[in-house]
Length: 513
Image 1 (cartoon, rainbow, N blue to C red):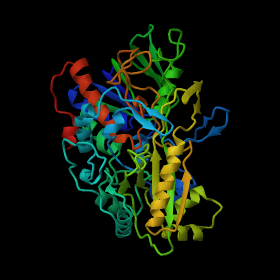
Image 2 (cartoon, one colour):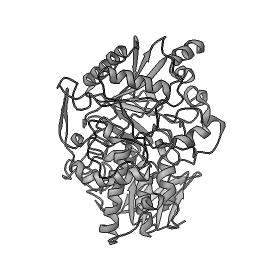
Image 3 (cartoon, one colour):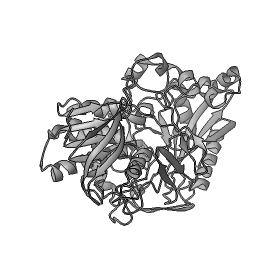
Image 4 (spheres, rainbow, N blue to C red):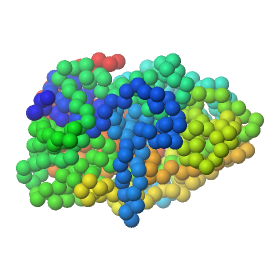
């Protein structure tokens, strides 16, 4: 183990793994610390009762609501982070998401740079994650400098019929941009990939797509089972000089030249706050008092359309989305959000949230239903925040923009009824479901109001970068993974050319492509 790595990356999710891929070919010594272990082949990977009813893969930890009520968060600690369970939707933010946008209950602020600034790295991230799609189908899709390298994942016959019905109803369904090798997946599984754990079965997650590319280079080392507990600095707003972590019950230390924090929006903020010392009583990187604040978690609901005359024979289902209500409500009013298919919701999955219902009834419901995910922007609010006391994490979160989300759900239900589904039901996701947590170390240009600059460098500690969903100034209303990956590649280029003094290089993303 290198006691003095030039770059230490904390976390191997989308942010950490992607920046590792972007930095790997620079030749500098890179160590990645991951709190969890690699997922290994096991029967539970395919067992929906284990995943959704017994919560086999969920960590045994509690976070707390503001009133002290504990809850078990739906976050995962393993190589690849939450992306091992994600739905593999790799969508770009809309061009309008980078500008200030008026919503029904507030304003989503502008980013400190435009879509055009990030666009080249979006294209590189799509190459790295082997995204499949057809961007010309989506009327809200922004400019692409490079087309997708692969055609979209095909609709199964039952899903194709639903797409056709919704088109007839006046909507514009488009093929979701997906990081899934569908032939490889189906050769190993007969389940959806959405919310299902992945172990080299064809899903392009952070481990499969990015970390594997980084680890092809001899200068990159992965250490698992390593939970970071503190960052240390010797003077006020000084460099991070030491990182403490616990592995197999022992407290160990590393002394890196640069630290990239990518532990996730909640855990990254908690680590900075927990690293408070006499020079930084409010936590590290927190002279703005913004660390942990502006927590956002998409307003999200499952919407199920049921028809006794419709038979859902699909396996994976999750192939199209609808953005007719993304930039407006369909009538020129405020934006409502994004709609996309969920992975096929079986009776065994339904049983996880409806334990009292008989299995035969849930199987019948599933066999005649189509399942959607409605997602609306959660606006940044300083009082929505992560705080810590010792090892205890408290999450204060009050939904914003909820009326717009209810309007989106209502619009989807109306469309489903018009498309031949007489019964449309919905259920919101709560804080136990990590619906794209973000915003706790927001990016900006003013150190008085932001935690990191436009290249995710801490204003307070010049060798500290925060590269995960924490930096996002807004949640938008699409899955954030591709935006995090694109920014990670942009930051990697910045570190190489500015900090390391390398003017050109071939990176691991090119190696994988």
